[in-house]
Image 1 (cartoon, rainbow, N blue to C red):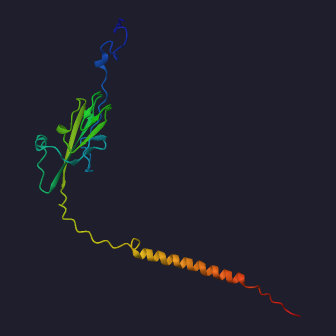
Image 2 (cartoon, rainbow, N blue to C red):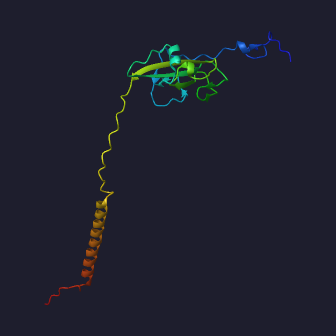
Image 3 (tube, rainbow, N blue to C red):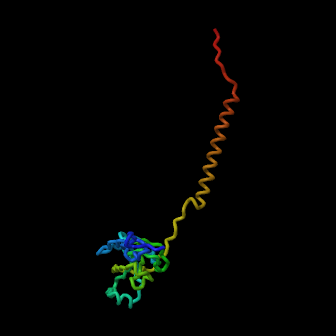
Length: 199
């Protein structure tokens, strides 16, 4: 059927070519300075929020990637932590492939990619933007050789003293019951003595 777009307001429909005229969804407001968190010991990409920030872990990006991103050389006795966050800026049907597929994302949804910068954090559509962060932390001292474990003090409940104590306790209980029983029998075996007074 023919629709005259001059007679009807059909700008929000595809009938009059209004698909491209629709207002885009408002983009989320991104912070100028991103909060960071970590290290937590995990480098698997995971859903996150803009407020939570960038998940930093020990950086797994190559030297070439770090150089392209102008990340300074790691100082001696320091460890480089890095991470990226992928944020959906406009509606998209495509998935973010960052060590796993993240699909059906809404505007302002985010995926954390710890231990990587944007250039090596996976494939993502144009409607998604990426931010990265890095930090240097003091390297932990190399752990020395583990000290030899001290010989365990034998737990008295696991040794022979435990069983000796149990045996003595049982003997005392059985002996006590025997003595009480013997005394009760002796009392019940006596003839009752009644004091009779003569007048």
